[in-house]
Amino acid sequence: MQKKKIYIAYTGGTIGMKKSPQGYIPVEGYITDVVNSLPELFRDEMPEFVINEYSPVIDSSNMSPNDWQVIANDIATNYDEFDGFVVLHGTDTMAYTASALSFMLENLSKPVIVTGSQIPLSEIRSDGQTNLLNALYLAANYPIPEVSLFFNNKLLRGNRSTKADSTGFNAFDSPNFEPLATAGIQIKIEAGEVVSPSSTEPLKVVTISGQPIGVVTLYPGISHTVIANVLAQPVNALIVQSYGVGNAPQDSALIAELRNAHEREILIVNRTQCFRGQVNMDGYATGHVLKDAGALSAADMTLEACLTKLHYLLSQDLSYDQRRTLFIENLKGERS
Image (cartoon, rainbow, N blue to C red; front, side, top):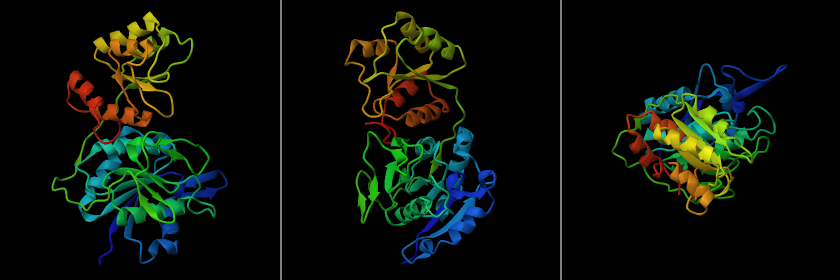
């Protein structure tokens, strides 16, 4: 049986860094040398793979929509030659990239797994070896044809993932959707579906561009001027991180700012600031005021999914009403 071929894109991040007197730094060619020195990646059970190191590599804190486009285009360029893709990425914005790619890669029939590590691959206690090995193994032997994120033995849907721990190995969680698969003693497929590539539609990459999007978290005593100042900037959308199931203070001036923004065709999204659960603007009067002002429910979407979905919709030639309709639809499994 012919071995599967997996394409590894090293975009940057801790996993490929080298220790220096100034701390960990990226060094060209270093991760390829380290990976090639790991015998377990070359066992018979493992797929063949090719590594492409980006030049320059990107610190994930500097990741932008332009970089999401570079990664998506890279996958498209190599799509026909490989059976699956592993994107090595820094952890700070990994969930944003995984979410963005899920919207950008249409007709995807092969696995795209984003992973990385909290400790560099070259260090003795690195979690990178386990994450990379499992990502390669899953991409080849359990091909779930969607964008996912693998970390600490869990394969999460990319647009359901969020960074939950800044220092622990269990750095990512999927608060409102169970893992696609878990890698314990046995590989267990949970919410994922392993399928053989059958799509006859060619992969399509949706081009996106950077969009001015505001994010405001409500807090007790917030002034309407905070909202007004954000909306005074050239923003095309505003994510309001509300209380509980989507509640906001019944401040007439604050609500008026949101209503005026809606009338100016600025997309207003109501997303709960709670880690789990979802928005229900019909539950309380304090939530209904946002609905009356034109706010759209984010349901149970992560902030990363909300923001990248807005980039995706705002980058296309769509009317305001079309964007509103599509935002509340479940396009790529990002909302229940």
